[in-house]
Amino acid sequence: MERAAVFDVDGTLVDTNHLHVVTWWEAFRQAGHDVPMHAVHRAVGLGSSDLIAHLLGEDRDRGQDDALSAAHKALYGQYFDRLPALPGAGELLRRLHHDGWTVVLATSASGSELGALRRAIDADDAIADTASSDDVQRGKPAPEPVEHALELAGVPASRAVFVGDTVWDMRAGAKAGVRCVGVLCGGIPRADLEEAGAEAVYADPADLLARLDTSPFA
Image (cartoon, rainbow, N blue to C red):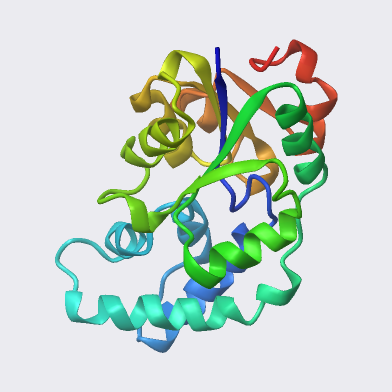
């Protein structure tokens, strides 16, 4: 039977979380909002509209949302040509593909941003498909991105493992009914990932690859 290995991208395969923190912080600052960086960090992993709502509240001036998202996109876009893959990211995807797993990315990124991330990972030969923010109505922590990834892979939740770096990833995976693996390279503490649904936690893709034979992928 087919098996699906579903991966978040930002903070899981590519070392971008703190770039998102700085660029979101600057976008908020330019719009007159004083949002602490630690708060932004805890919100990274949410889609743009959900991140803004999480940090500014439901009673905010929603007329600013599009401008905030555009400012973040422009600021973050300056790094597209030098996004760094996390240790072992491409090797892990190729190993899973070689072992018969269907590798699917589940990310809030799309368009040129997604293209930049895939270039950083440099493992397109191992990636079967991508479930992006353009494909679903609700992003993580809703299960839709993971569920769509499973549809693309053509496998049930019982035949899938989802790897991510945030509590939003773990909650989305848990709601979708898949086994969840956390990585610490996005900067979220182990205890938070485990509380949100992580069955196992590794330092980064290289650590998971080194211990693959004893992981949920075994």
